[in-house]
Structure formats: structure tokens, C-alpha cells
Image 1 (spheres, helix red, strand yellow):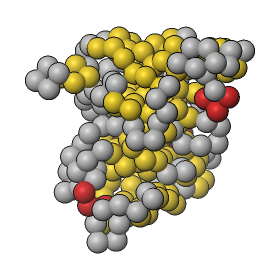
Image 2 (cartoon, helix red, strand yellow; image 1 turned 180 degrees about the vertical axis):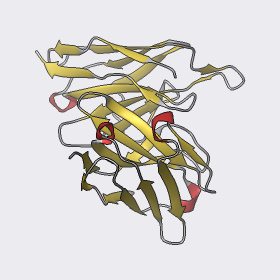
Image 3 (cartoon, one colour; image 1 turned 30 degrees about the vertical axis):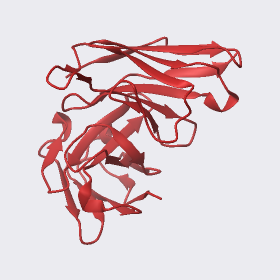
Length: 120
Length: 113
């Protein structure tokens, strides 16, 4: 059974940093691209960033230069380093498995999410 | 970015009746070389993450009941639930997986009439 468990969310002030992690199990981690998708009541679902099985990364424009995505295939983990956080980064962040090693762009399995709140 | 627009925003259907949700993309998501439409549908129940129902516009994800059907091509797509069950109450989202950034519709809330 595929399991994705996010951690690292919390309350941070504008301009601060957080590091989100996603621990994966139940599948061959290196064989799948992974993504972060965030959700807010106002903006709905928004894809944030993705990484292929071999480590190629992709970002939505609003987080480029601020967020860095990485993965450790030996530990079955993915991490999102979020710097220069803004109020509008406030959301539930989901870790999601894509359909193949390369970016397929659809999300077959999702974690339960971790809440990031950016507020002073 | 490709803008995804769903209609209606909310929908109330009687148990056993058909539910139809529409999704329109601001540009075609049909990849002509493969003749595949890069369109997915998700179901989200309260307090849960989204669940993949359909991808490539009409390919049902493993374990999804066959009362869920995706159709359409190019810019216009439909999710049909042939006979609504109580457990289908949820918010449904379409999403294009044609290009980065992948974008979602605003969601359609499905309720029982």
C-alpha cells in the first residue's frame, strides 16, 4: 500500500523559512516523479513543484528562487525547502506521487497534508 | 498558464440519478502525436486529500467504480456519475496535465437532492 507522510509544517513569520518532508513507502520510490500540491480555501488546488525520479525539478513561477525541491532515493524521502515565505504561501501542502519516473502531471497518490501558516 | 473552468460550481442530484460536471480549458490539452487528452479528474471528501478518478480524460484509475466516466477532447470535458450514490458526495476537480504549471479547476460541489 502506498503511503506518503508529510511533516514540517507550522507557523512562521513572513520572510522566514520552513522545510517540508515527505516520507514514502509501499512502492519503488526512485521509479516515480513526486510533487507538492497546496490547497487554500481561496485559491483552491495549486501545483507547486515536482521532481522526477532522476532529480530534474520544476516549479510554479510564484515560488521560483524561493523554494528548492530535492529527494533522497536511498531514504525514500522528498524535501521542500521554503525560504522567504509570504502570507500567500499559507496553505495545506500535499505530497503526491505521479504516474511514472518522468513527469506525468497527474497525481495518483496523496499524503494527508501538512499545514503551513505564514503570519506575523 | 492554462485556465481550467468548471461548471456548475455546485450541483444537487437525487440518489440513483445521473450527475454531470463540465470542465473547459483555455487551450487544447490534446497532444496530437499521441492523440491523448491530458486531463484528470479528482474527488475530494471533507478532511481528506484529493483522490484520482480519471486521467488521460477517460482512463479510470484502478479501483474507481465504473459509474464514473470521463469524456471529451480538446478543450471541453465531462465527468459523469451514472447513478449517484451517497458516498459520491464530494468536491470534484478537473486538472490539466498537459503542461507545467499543471492547473486545476475551481471545483464543483456535489450534493444529494
